[in-house]
Image (cartoon, rainbow, N blue to C red):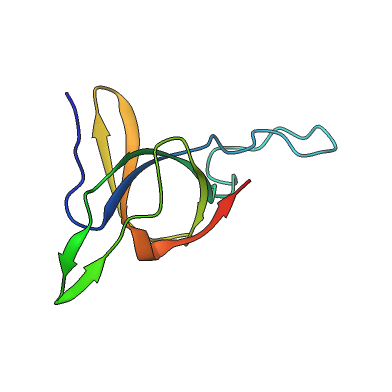
Length: 94
């Protein structure tokens, strides 16, 4: 199954959370911090959104930082993704 984001939406896949601390302590899944760095998997076409022209500057493969609780989480073919607006992306990691 393929997901194609619409308008100014971006499909991202969050990186895995750290399972151990720097000192070697193994963390339970409930104690792990939600990751904020993700990889862009698909990008919508942009266009007119709420009466304003939106140009998409993100591209597939970009590593980005998002707000902690932004977007909609979806699960497709056993993989977990998040769909966010381009404006919810805080930075591109280079």
